[in-house]
Length: 469
Image 1 (cartoon, helix red, strand yellow):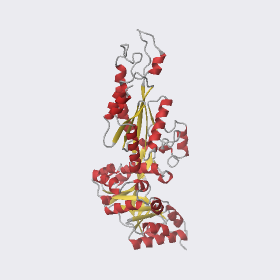
Image 2: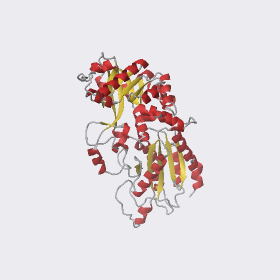
Image 3: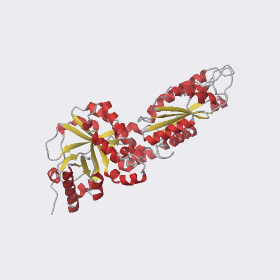
Image 4: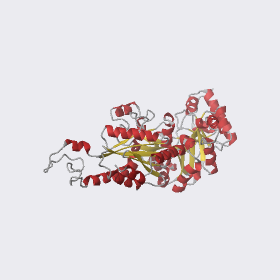
């Protein structure tokens, strides 16, 4: 085998490791696919360089290829695409090279696949010689495994997927869980209900099956003025949803129940959908995006968001970014542990946003001293208090009513507008307006349905005045 020839064509293992480390430091979404020929025979020296040259054609500034030794090839790409979508053309090209090599004459003058039909058809009798079952076992086949994420764990996950492909004699396996037997993100308890989880339990594990990302949908909450005339523009707060296997209605994904990397991936995916929404809007559109996890990972706001706005020609004032108050209250602890300044700062993210005329809303705000201290010196445009405060206040809880009143007074002093989150409450629009709330979030629907409604059809829910003694 001409290993030196392969290494001269592609970067080596050390180079690939450096690319993985850099992607981890950048906290950009990236994916890795590993390819291997099994079984690897001594007479394949002419095949591996061809595969290497084919893989080299996919190299670019954002896509890195390498030879990891022992006939294993690797590719790393910065992409938001599902693994199935970006790996497919690579795998197809490599398989075409392998097929071409198999069609060439072997040392005995016969094509290397003389005993086999193309594709998945049945074996054909060789009228010249007998069929040797060992030919079936020894014939080389290409297997691949892929994974994606935000850390160096992506490489290990791709290795696990490749091992599963070899064990199960599959051509491609995608890793979509924390370990080999874990469920994919679509099977997470935050997304699937008990009945849905029961459906998945009877299926193969998270490494096998259709891409769950194809079931992701954009859900939207309309933000409407509280007890005021409707605006001429449409304001939507987006969230990711999933089309269940057992229901026709998309279900929201509870971002709070996901780990940081899963949440960040969904936030990045959601941001990638806004161009289509702006292009399909017939009314003046404003969009709120949740970016709590992504804000803590981003290298800088400009590197993350500005290219998105510029590409889709979206005025910055039309974009609002939502950050959970927990990310800001935890910031001092993060800074203390990273005094060298290498840790990205959520506070810096907020400041960069305001400098570009992008507004920020802080969600799940409890009105406590710690929360106000966390936002006291930040250019916050909006605050959305904890949903529980509205539920309790609507039920007549005097402490909750007072808390909302205090939040309204403090926000008014600071020039911050208040938003009522999507929550079932008996508080009427008139009462909420009296507390200082400017906007109310409506229940989620699909983004297309929200766009079709238009601001002229908006209507906020009516409630009764709370009972206050």
